[in-house]
Length: 421
Image 1 (cartoon, one colour):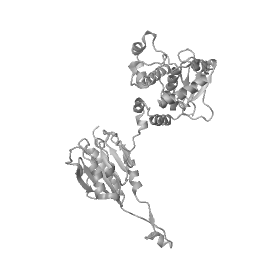
Image 2 (cartoon, one colour):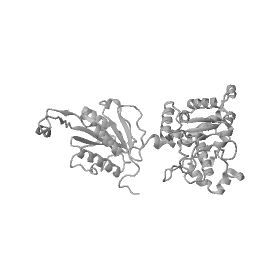
Image 3 (tube, helix red, strand yellow):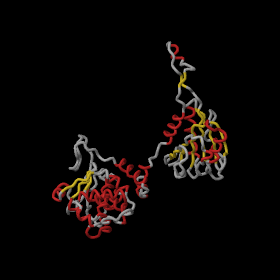
Image 4 (cartoon, one colour):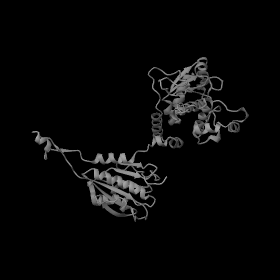
């Protein structure tokens, strides 16, 4: 990756080129690196302001504000490939919030643990710099797990040999928060500028993942690592309520003036109470528990009873429609989940039923499934009504592959009400 021109570059130019190269080759880390503010320091200033934890010359560091001070002599001596790795390494301290997770842990030990955790992630995408700690024993382990292992002297000897615990190559400026009097606890960074805000790790990661995914270069390891952040679990009950409220008519008419307004001597419109049809599809797969059916249907029943102009029809389906029932005052959620079929699972019959029997009257389809199901096809999903797929906790969310209509998938949370601990 080195070129003759690089030997003529200033350290600042090398940093600029490295960030551009990261964007091109490793867009996830490249985008995160654009959140950092490089601060150039002479070797003398660097040794004073960001001393190397191991006692050698200062290298590079990062703080919670995204400041990335670097020793010009250190950057000058690095190859282009090693500089990519070092900058990516610094971004991960912010992404993984290592600078705010130390707590009362030993600083040197935590430095090593965080570097090991980061480098064992980076090694799957780029070459680890020769001075970067990367012990295979710590594969797939968090900084906290690595720290706990290194608390035992015998483990330090086993991993690093007779020399004992090594040092982290870079400087970590920790943020321990403030005490009860509002005073900064522990050490603080000397690089914060007036008015400078802390980096938002969640936003940084989402921006980076979005850009990398658009380039088709989002590393699978990063997608798994930040899964909860990139695919946040939505509360399906709140989402269900929003969907239903969105399809309810919000219109006014003077045909039937408000009686309360008439008595006051003026006319005000009354609300149009058009009845809205929604369909509730129920996957009769045997892998869905009675508790899951009951919780889902009970929620639907409660919402229809709370809204007077809402009409809901439940369609129970496996490979074919098994039962169609309206939700009314006699509806019993448990009654309609007994004796269900187990002959394969398809949603097509439900969409076909709506297409043939209900046409444009349906404003919303809510479908409970374990996710091991086919997906709707265009010739039976033509009216454009939104579809809210509610997937059981142990189900799959990856069954939709075509962008047809307005569909969203939400997953129930892990524990079902009534399920034993």
